[in-house]
Length: 344
Image 1 (cartoon, rainbow, N blue to C red):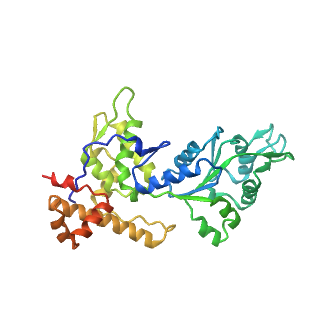
Image 2 (image 1 turned 45 degrees about the vertical axis):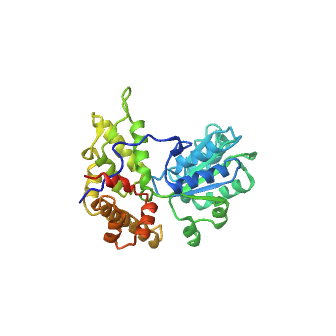
Image 3 (image 1 turned 60 degrees about the vertical axis):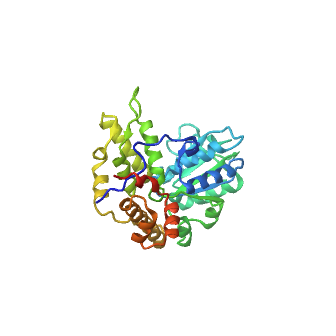
């Protein structure tokens, strides 16, 4: 497969404009999310973050917490899918001594610990039905009792929930309470997957190179061919998979530059072969078709620009577009046309 050159020889420094309370992105959709978070920051409004596994939902929740104004309390996170069903109520609300076998002392729950700050409920779609009722009451009244207790505890928390499951569909199937869904879905953030944020791959790669630099050594650089591989991969594991790939290369290889061969073998195999579209039945087919078409269109235009050394008119002829349409597509896909005028 012919390699399409990128206008990078090493990861760009991550500029301050591409950082938002610990979240790294130069993507326009993400910057719109950052603006929304700035608007939500001064309030205690409940936020629902929806996105695929590995897209950075907790990191975004921490950004919402950091953007909060005048709320000095902590950020407290609970993965609802990781806590056994029988223990979830105690985990969230705490328990009194003797409330059940093994409760040898009083325990403060996560909601109480988050007073004055943020309570992050990760994988909220996995909360069992009996707990959904109790959670609804907390969201409505901002109060609860510990397991085995009678004293009502008042709390002041911002609740942020996150899920990779289609909650609205679960409501229709009666798998999730409709009233709880609307209590959570006050401000919703749909976090886009990495495959539609290709422009975020270079700054994220640079960020992870810095994060996993050896003590006393400068961050590793990525060869242009390596960035090309990273940008053409579909990232089914999203940002988490990218981070793992960069960490692996930084730890295993002692050189200053990460070459394509230093990437995980499965990534190189996928990029060098025919990469099938990632099938996510939790998303509408039309969305997957649109994203797959957009990726193919971008690669086709890039290859045409390479062949014509960046000449838009001749590339438009190859693509079957008029010059004006191709110029619009180049802008839409954020293709650096000038980089192809330097192609040898």
